[in-house]
Image 1 (cartoon, rainbow, N blue to C red):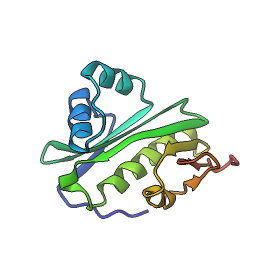
Image 2 (tube, helix red, strand yellow; image 1 turned 30 degrees about the vertical axis):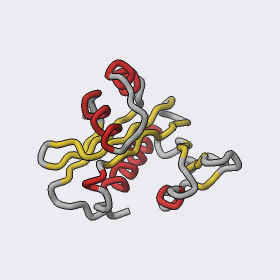
Image 3 (cartoon, helix red, strand yellow; image 1 turned 45 degrees about the vertical axis):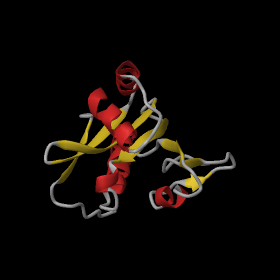
Image 4 (cartoon, helix red, strand yellow; image 1 turned 135 degrees about the horizontal axis):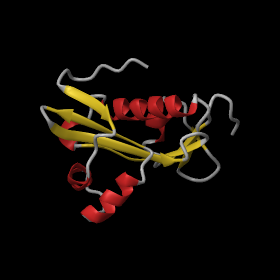
Length: 144
């Protein structure tokens, strides 16, 4: 999937820190977490991604799991001032590409999404499961 980002936005793997994490969850209005909790979440992540513009963190995401057969995507967030610029799509695609690289493309990826934003994830191969608000993207050699 080709994604056209605004030229000054850069997406990087494994560069997310707890300060940026806490700043972003505050910007998007999510339940606050302590720096200690953020540090633990990031330490336990299999992969993190961060989007920056002019050195400022404007988006993030993370995935946890075993790195071979299963991963769960969490905390895809883009600062409201930067939404609508394909940054969220670039974060998800970068996470999925890295998970595929780690697993040889056979990893099953899950995430939780509201009915309102499920369509966003469906374009990446996720399908709604029988569990409400739970989407799955099977690995190429895995079945639902």
